[in-house]
Amino acid sequence: VSYGNGGGQEVRPPERRKPTQDEADLTAKNYRLAKELSELRVRHRDETKTVTRLTMENMNLASRCREAISHVAMLKKELAMHQRRAAESLALQRQQSQRMSELEDGAVASASEIVA
Image 1: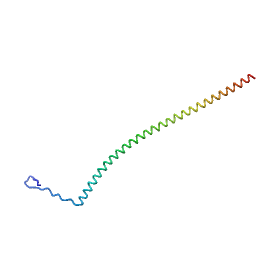
Image 2: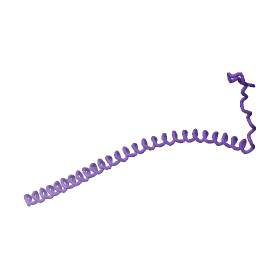
Image 3: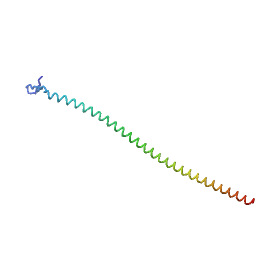
Image 4: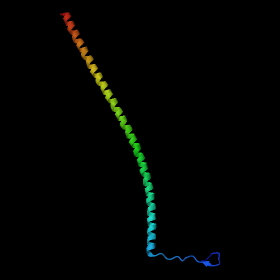
């Protein structure tokens, strides 16, 4: 193949020399490393997506745990309040029973004094 340069003379492209064995080996290694790099980039992108997804899930679970802990704390306070009220009510009932018993004992004593 010859090319014209417009001046009437033919210019031949430079002859392509055959690569040396070292150059061929380095070229093959370069292609292999480029392919490996491409695969690693794809893997890194996929793993980054996974990490992002797991991070979001973790944040969501942490938020739900905080809500649950807050709810448990509220229920514990409510339970303590009900227990305190129940204890107060029981103490009040005991006082009333004791007063009634004292009144009955006093009435019986008064009645026996009147009879005697």
